[in-house]
Length: 501
Image (tube, rainbow, N blue to C red):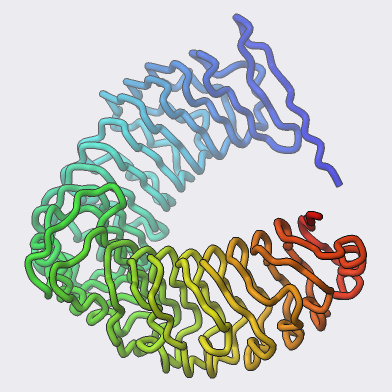
């Protein structure tokens, strides 16, 4: 079944043109060196991409009456001057994007007409303050003002009436100090707001400035200049209630030098459900990364060098991510008996010298151990015991995985099994998967398997997707032709079957 799309070109002076996709009211005039809205644009338009043109001076007459226009993108149009009531003829806009314009004058009534505006993007516009004349934008939900020179996160007092306001993006500004009065409006707005402060040179947070504030998400990655500054900053956030907390450093940030082992203690005074810690270095001394995270439902530690997982008595954890932290041992022993854990992701680590068994995890449904260069001579009941609810198991991009008959005993609930780009031993001639009656997806592509018979897929009656490219078939013609019917795939799909003599 094919989808046919038509592009219609409208001539506009000097050989320029705009395009329209006929199955929508979305027009693009991007990068046409235009200095006005073309008269060929119909009044019924709903989305207009006018980015990368030339509109240095915006005033009311620039826009024709476009009553149905909802999205207007004026990114990088060299706009310097915005007059009062500029957007009167497009007053029903829901999204206005002004990214990358060197705005030197913004009339106090420039946004007055936009009563229905929900999303305002002023990224990289030279903005130095949030004290904008936006009184009429009572339906505003998102304000994105990253990559500017804003020095205070203080919002205008009238924004306390913006009850639907849910996102303030202040990344990469020049905010160095946060005081209690700077957060006054946040206390009034509501409980679901996302606040992004990443890449600001934050030097000081007044203790208690966030006390009693409820946020949906707080992103403070790459805001602290040192480990000591992070320690003080986290402690100053005491009393904050936030669903999702992101902190640490982005990948390309400078590295901390750890001077003590209690630099994360401030987390114990912040109330959060989910925490994402981005760490880029190896502490010189053993540290307790997780001590203040034991009440979280979702925990992610990404990057850094943590040789060995500590024993943590998580109380309500549902999801745990340990990504690129160079674990020397798969921490089955440390994580066993977590009765609430449903999803475990341990990926992109150095080759673990040992893999401890994961035991007594009755709610575990999702286990991703990909890209760890693991060698398991016998899988998988030697690694997983009393984990009856597992639906998803990923061993892709590891060194070698050995399978035996009975290797999946107790794992009968598996629905998705992925071994791609891992050397898989013994699956080519043994019926090691026969008890996986619920298996829907199997990927053994590029796994250096030589299939000598079709019994490898015996019993997989619910299999919908089989990926088996990059392997070998002995007596390939008869085996290959019989495979789909034998595995119950006659009315289903076999993906990328490839075979070599």
